Image (cartoon, rainbow, N blue to C red; front, top):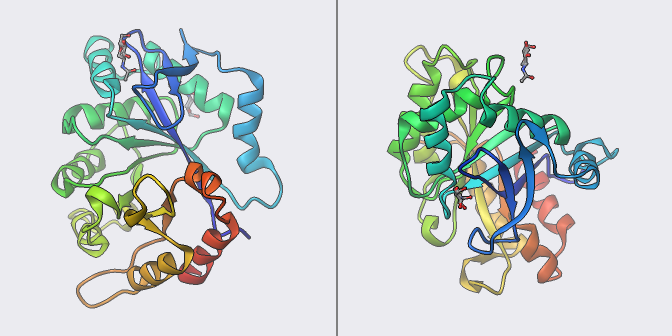
Length: 276
Ligand SMILES: *[C@@H]1O[C@H](CO)[C@@H](O)[C@H](O)[C@H]1NC(C)=O
Ligand SMILES: *[C@@H]1O[C@H](CO)[C@@H](O)[C@H](O)[C@H]1NC(C)=O
């Protein structure tokens, strides 16, 4: 057991023609690294596909969920909404076929929406419908990675929960940034705001997963050592009369773990200690 059960790959974008691309490490402005799907076909190569598949298929990893994250630092969301306006949300559209091809090639489970600037409820839910099950690209889940704007995500949840195109609980996790611009976030307050809808169907609850930044040299004051992370996660895991406890915890990002020669198992063991 590693303590990790989910991998989120960062970051992806959509070009004007519907191509899905993977950016160079840590930067949309650094440009496209690889085109992954084009014209409804996976074009990212067999070695990348087997690498991503290995996260789940290698015995003993404990990983049962792999997500791709789309960032708003470029114009991916604008490109996606223009395509949604032009073509709609059906499985025959080039955008849906590209996402379905990538999902199949990589055996993906969820799409992570890291919108930090556009904040349009209607196109956010339409994108979920295009990705959804069983009438879209058949992703199992849709998630968010906000640092702010609780009201926007609560509105997305209400709208997604009432969409006839989406199964209950399709939008199921919020990975809440707890460093830098999101350092003051109260996970309990978010959990309360994203509680089940009026019919109290617990399948409609979004699970809150606070995310800490590991030790890093980009903004050292925003980093958490494993010991610091354990203190925070233990606090957030507890329920109180005013706040439900969170569902789990996670980290941004593996690049810094490698660069700072930190220990994956030390960070993973914190999750076992705090949440199991
Ligand atoms: C949006 O599409 C345009 C045209 O294809 C492209 O130049 C731009 O890089 C795309 N945005 C992102 C974030 O990939
Ligand atoms: C999604 O799943 C449904 C139900 O199994 C199936 O009919 C449909 O063809 C699938 N679509 C894609 C794009 O895989």
